[in-house]
Length: 113
Length: 109
Image (cartoon, rainbow over all chains, first blue to last red; front, top):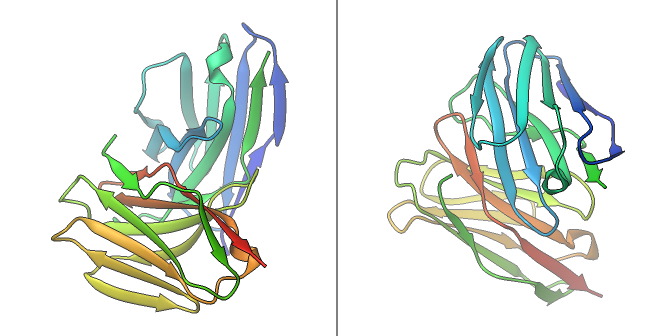
């Protein structure tokens, strides 16, 4: 069966520090990979998605970036965090089927201080 | 992102009652529709998917889709305290899903 791992679970970072969140998927090949953010009491905002190695689509212009160095690995990064980057970051995957549902990792709760 | 509107909450129902959740979407080209449940502090988990007009039942959950009205709903029958959570509807069709803000349901014993 497929599993998705996301770490760390919680993170407290000062403003201006860098960020690296990592996500890996097991048990499937060539998944579509996603990064979502959920601000407190808000809905899910799609940040990036990838349909293949090295292919990244950005949905929201901001100081975050994403990379997919391997088929089942997705990384979210920032060079300098802002207070507004605080939130619950969720990595997710779908199969290659056009209408496949999203399956989420456990999330990373980021607090920028 | 494409718009998704969910009925405002919170929704409080007694144990054993039916909880009714509604969602409308803006993109007529959407092909896939999902309901997710999110417990406080946790990530969303998929509870229902529906792709065709009509009803789909899975245990105590029933999803209803009406593409002409751009409307999808979720009924939770025999509500249990463990159903207390935020329910998110989502729709998509081009490798991306758009989510509603969620409706928080509280089942009171």
